[in-house]
Every structure is written in C-alpha cells, then in structure tokens.
Length: 427
Image (cartoon, rainbow, N blue to C red; front, side):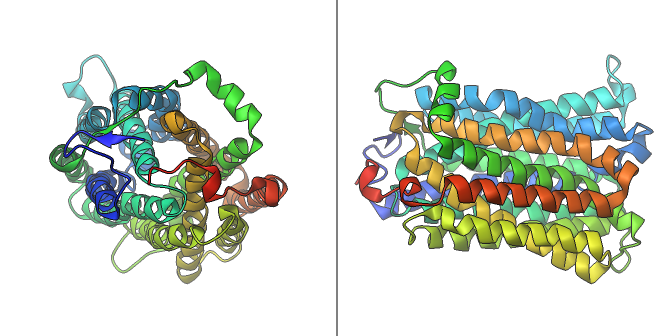
C-alpha cells in the first residue's frame, strides 16, 4: 500500500482520490506530449536542412530512446525508493529543456565545442533521461493507486491522456515548420514542455512506497526469466514500438514525399504531421476505450490478438496502396492497433507485478519498448533506401504475425489468467 504526501492517507481507498491522482498525471503528460509532437515532424528532415547523412538522422531520432533504454530500470528503482513526485518533476523539466537544444543545433556556431549533429544528439539524450522518469513514474503511480478491478480503466485514461497531446503537437509542428520554420517549431516545443513542468509542479502528488523488502536491479533478469508472461508483454511492446515509433514515424515524411502525398497547400513535412496525428489520435481514443473493456475480462490478453491483426493490416494497406485516402486509413488502423495492445498489456503487467517492484517492472516494460523504438529509425531509413517502402512495410506485417503467435502461445489459457483475488488490493 502506498500513500500521498499531500493530503495524507491511502490513495487507493476511494475513487475520488484515484481521479485526483490520474487527473494530475494527465494534465502534466498532455502538455509534455504536445512538446514531443511539435518536434517530431521536423526531425526526420534534418538531413536536408543540416547536410547530414540518413544514418546520422536515424541516430538523432533514436538517441532519446537509447538513453531512456539505459535509464528506465534505474529510474524505476529510484521511484520505488523515494516516491514519484521529485523524480517525475526532474523528468518534466529535462523534457522542457531539450527542444531549446534543437534551436542551438540549428545555429551550431553558438556552440563551439560541438557541431550541429552533436548538439542534436546531446539534446535528444537530455530528453531521453527526462522521459524515462516521466513514463515509468506514470505507470508506477497508476499501478499503486488502483486494483485489478479498475486498473485497465485508469491505465487507459493515463495512456490516452499521455498521447492526446502528441497528435496536437504533430499537427502544430508540421504547420509551424511549413509556415514559420524549424526554429519556431522547436521554441514552441520547449515552451510546451516547460509548461508541462509547471503544471506537474502545482498538481502532482507524491506516491510514497512502503518500506518493505524490494528486489534490486540485478534481480530483474531472474524475474523476467521466471515468468514468461513478463517476457511476452515486453516482446509485444518491443514489436509495437519498433514498428510504430521506430519505423512508421521515422519514414512517413519520406513516404509522403516519395508518393507525392500532399494535403492542400502542405508539403511532405506538413502533410506527414497530419498523417502521424491521425495515427496517434486513433491510438489515444482506442486506448481509453480498450482499457475499460479489459477490466471486464477474465484475461486482458484476449484483446491483444485482434488489436495486432488491425495493426498489421494498416502496414499492409500502406505497402500496397500508396494514396492519400489509403495512407490516412492505414495509419488510422495502425493507431487502433497500438491503442488496442498497450493498455491491456500494461494493466496486465501491473496485475502480476510484486507490490514493491512496480517501478522496476515498469522500467522493464519501457526497456523492451525503447529497444524497439531505438532500433527502428536506425533500420528503417537505410532499409527504405535499399528495398523501398513496399517491401519494408510488408516485413512489418510479418513481424506482427510473429508477435501474435507468441501471445497465443503464452498469454492465453487458464494458467495465464490473473484474477482479482490473486493480487493484493489496497481497498
């Protein structure tokens, strides 16, 4: 059982207190999502702007996830030991600072010790450290204040709110880049990030961990090996993040330009911002709905296979029919698939996590996801240049099929079901 410093007492005992904590989280992460969304449509075009290679652009896109990959589990341990407020505030602040580094990268002469690519790499690393504490802290907080009967619903609300800011930022970033330039887009991203910090500072409570015995970081590999369900949840997250955040979001700008996909007066960058926003918007809406539905099932994993089927069909449509209507439909299907897999599996992980190790297992979940989203841009851009978008997206479909087979083999059946009675409740 955990508590909140402000107000005292148990936070999981009443629906009102859960609403307060979840609402505080949603407010902060929404504006953080806006900041991340504003920057994303502009970053894949850095090769032309700065005269750097596609490989370096992919590395810049991946750096935040590579750093977060390393920081996730230590962040989870810190959250398990000292509570959620201070680590998450530090994370929000670092996220707000990073886009101002992008502005310096566009004016590299102001930074004598680094070239433009180095400044962008350093800024993305700062973002990665901040986002590790924000993402793991959000999962840890929601898991500690809920129980298996309502966890899916509140995970859905939290993840939905976390991603709703992103599509708004994607559209805004594309429009700003097209009309006012990259500097304006990055300045707005930084402003949104710092505003998220201000909101979190005012409303974010501190969920204190209990003083019970906890496992250390060195115990995590053993925990993953001991329960194949943890590995499967992580592997599906790896696949989804590899294909969505890694492949799709890294290539959609070039895909739009290669297939002359334009929206009104917008060029490839502006159109791609809207296309990406469609995917994230559908993901957000689906996240909220599916999280609540999962609370009514004896096994949340039942929702995963149809979600993966929809996810894969979106990539198939992009591969075979490269037109504006089919692109919008394909990205929408991908978004539905992302939203359909994330909340049930994340809530499922919360159900089976030891009470004092939610932060660290949340870090493990993000490690799998960040492995995927880190590798994605490094693979996607060079691979597209070699085999083209059609073959690359069809390979994505094949990987989704493999993930579905793994889910069917390990998360279905009576032995894989988590019942409310089997997991301690704070009620």
